[in-house]
Image (cartoon, rainbow, N blue to C red; front, side, top):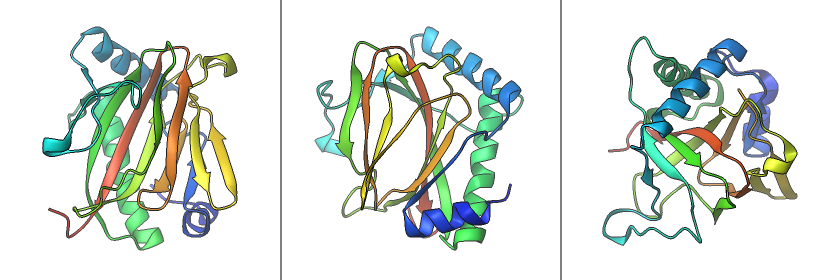
Length: 199
């Protein structure tokens, strides 16, 4: 895949860009169907905050349920994994970010006001996440469902609706963000990219 010039410029100057149609509607609906099926299996776990021995669960801070998505052929989620791999290569080539591996997580907010308080995706003192890319798989999202992504920019805030096939890319160490309370089920797939020298 290729990045548009305005996307590269926005990432450098403002720390983020969005794209309204990342995979196309047929593939996006297939991702939604597979993600919904994984949620229905009951295998997602409550998300924690912090890492390692400091990890805790606190729904007052974060109320989603998560699982990790691996590279797999012949599935819609596997196709999304491949698209994220291509995105990482494009970010390295077009924005000179020197990215290496990435992790891909499926997050399900069950509604009922589930949210994620303001935070950074980079963890101090560790091999840091460089770029965050979030893909939304919510075909029937309406404003009353809530669950907006709020980005904290230098000149104010930007709220992004989690609509089907929307991609949001931002610098993990630069932009604080939060998920506003979701009043309906909300699906997001997030890739975190590390530098080439990360462990």
